[in-house]
Length: 324
Image (cartoon, rainbow, N blue to C red; front, side, top):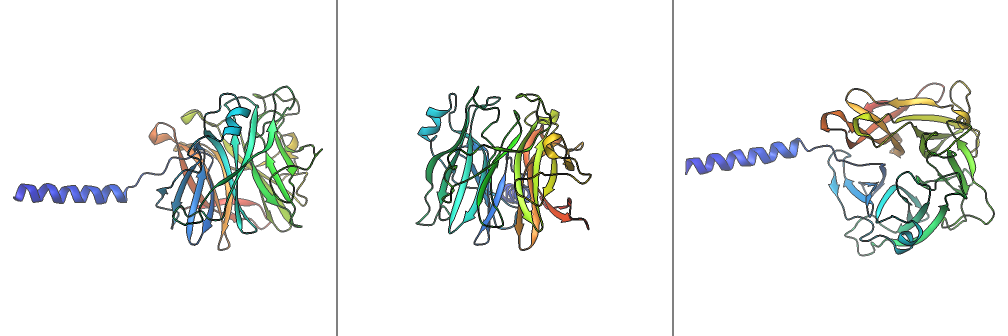
């Protein structure tokens, strides 16, 4: 009897300890938004991975966005089987807009798609993701840019734009139609950041644009160098700013981000390698920077990190207090 009670107590203690030492969740390319006091993270994964939390500390896995790969995407991108990259979530006019990337590693035969919903609560009766299909497409041999890593931004006049891009000819910007589902006919992508003037897919390691407005500037965040190599990853984050959404974006010493400029925001250390693919979220007047980093203590596995952003007197962001 005492032996049974002993093992029961030990088992309960171990369960409580395991819960208290909940491991940091593994994500890639995270974005976050809050609805009714609940934070939702969307990240790269089969069908788009989703997590929820009420405190940005304890995360619960939610139902993925797509139960199966969108048929249009399977047809448009050879080799695509449902592992969707780099989603971007926004709330516009009573609806959530979720842009996502469809591609295969190292190729620019890619598409950006769009799904919408009126709620993120999977238990709500109105919860339903509606896929609107392709928004932008890049074609090998036709385009020297890559249609992945989307980010929606509305300018100060309310006009929607989509930034995107990875390697090749750098980061791009395009206006969207008012319904946010397509690009106006004849529009040509604007280059907003690049590392090199003479580029090909492997020689221009820049991706994951994320633009926010903080008067009087638009701030362009981006990731440079190489992700996805575990402890060998060299990813780091840069930032530039402009008074115009279309640029030019420059760093704190005036270097243009289109020709290799960029103020260093954060880089890895001995514990966390390859920090990058960030999003910036303002919650109750506090700016948060979330991103993934490769955990040196866990064989380079990609984990979620969140840090409060603060601002210098001359209006440049810097990472302050880590909260996750």
